[in-house]
Amino acid sequence: QGSVLVTNHQRITNQRARAPYGVMAAAGIESSLEGQPLVKHGGASSYTGLSSEGRLPLRPSGNSAALTAGILVADVVGAGILSMAPAVSRLGYGLGSIAIVFFLLMNVHIALMLWRVQMKCPGSRTLVGLTSSVFAGSTEEARMGMVAFAGTAQYVFLIMLLCVYILTIGKSIGMLFYDVSSCLPMWTLLGSLIVLPMNTSARKLGTWHSLIWLNCSTICGTIVIPLVYMMVIGVSESRPASSEMVAVRQGVGFSDVLMASSTFAFAFTGQFINVEIISEMRDPTEFPKAYVGYSLPFQAVAFLIVGLGGYYYKGDSVTGMITDNIPFGPSLRASAACLTTHMVITYVIKAIV
Image (tube, rainbow, N blue to C red; front, side):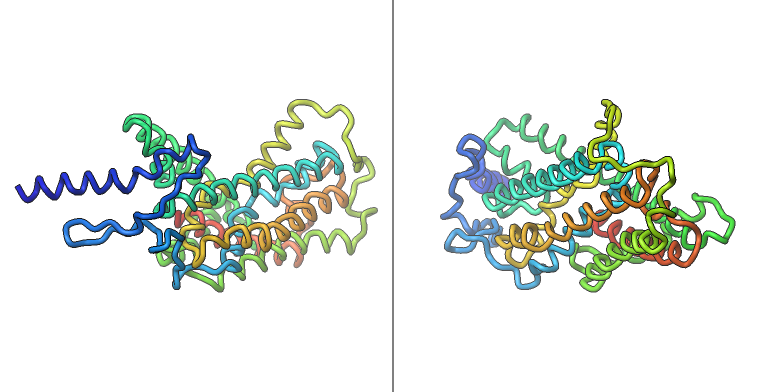
């Protein structure tokens, strides 16, 4: 009898905890959660994420706004930024600049929408949990279906993204030791061994504070070193005679728009782990400050510099990653070392989720 009572009480408690979220979608995510900050059952307390005044509590051990901005930079400015120049070359620097700004603003818009929803579902710490809370008022089949869809989409994307990252790590190690004869699978295996100890020791996105700031520095090194090299030798040397730079490329076809848009969309896909990033903040209400105030300017400058700079110095002959457009030598080694460090840290951040 005691087991039955506990089970029924737990079910009622879960229904009470989920009830405020059920009217969210129809009411424009404006339902109030005040009045149920703490639910007690069986002598224990279940924290719903609200203070006694109905506000989000501070987390003393959480990440600051500045550290969160560094995590956002590491999340968004990953492998996608390295291929900005070829994407811009498919459209021209005019259309390419507009596309970069558009996709960046869309990324910010979607991130802030997720943040607003999470502020109304403060007990949710993952994208799957947030989906479950939002659809709590639907039928159980509909809720579970949306939870399964969100979880599958998130993890399939992250797994495929980690595959791209580990291949990039292998390629960057091969570029670092370009005078050593070996194949990409071996370099990728070495990269996996480098990632392993960090990946097994980090359980939170802000575990390694110093690595977050190191990552921001290596991002700058990865993109600045090739551009500085091309600037030093001059555009007359870096850009082939048959290559050109135009504001709007003539004869832009569907395939050009599709490839460029795919590159931009891939580069600006931070929404898949934004809920987890917000849940680890010391004060989640500072997420807009971290994103718009700190992270957005860095992202805008970085993406535009790589996209327009690489296109300017190489013209429409630019290919692959920005590091692929400089010859063997000290500059390539330095850029590859920065790229390796950057991708290892970014891999760990994604893998934690």
